[in-house]
Each structure stands twice: as structure tokens, then as C-alpha cells.
Image (cartoon, rainbow, N blue to C red; front, side):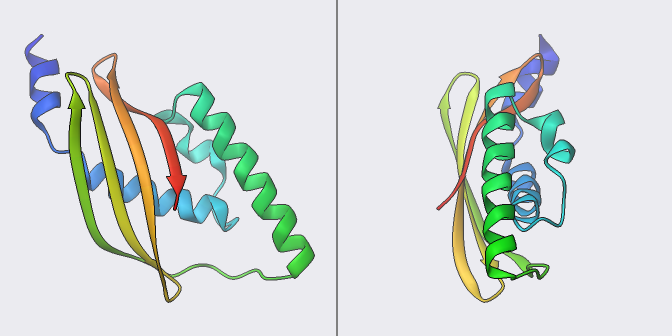
Length: 119
């Protein structure tokens, strides 16, 4: 029980920032979705795979294939209930500022991403 209390009090902002950068790389085709599977719920993993496939089809049509330059601007997290955090990560992606919205829940004593989206 004390491990769960310690985990709830740790701010997940650095974790959200790393996952967001990896998510952008998955969408850009630089990283495989399987590399995020450990931190995603099954439904979220399926959604990420579907979005990555759509992005890959779009890259095939447009011919744009470049590694994005991702830099962190800021991260804000909010405790939404006893076992969940909602967060927004602002990233600079190849010259454009974008936001990634993340929701994580404490499942089996570790955070699992239940929702992630690029805004």
C-alpha cells in the first residue's frame, strides 16, 4: 500500500513528456507503436496503431518522410481523481507548436496511459 501512495504523489510530468515525444515519433514513422505498448492500455494501443497506419498512408501519398525535431516547451498535469492524472504537454515539432493530451491511471501500481491525442 505504501508503494501506491508514493506513486500517486510523484508528479508524472516527466513521464508524460517522454511518452508524448515518443508518440510524435510513432506518428512520424520513426518509432514503432510496439515501443509504447508497455505504457498503454489495450484500447489506447489499438488507437495509436490505427493513427500510425493512417499517418503512414498519408506519408506514402505525399512523399514527406523526415524525422521531426521535437522539443519540450512545458508540461502541466492535473490530478483528476484518486488514481488518475490528466496532462497537457506542449511540444515544438519541426517549427510548429502542438499539444498532446494524456490521461493516465494507476493500474497495478504503475501508470498506464488510457488516452493520448495530438491536438
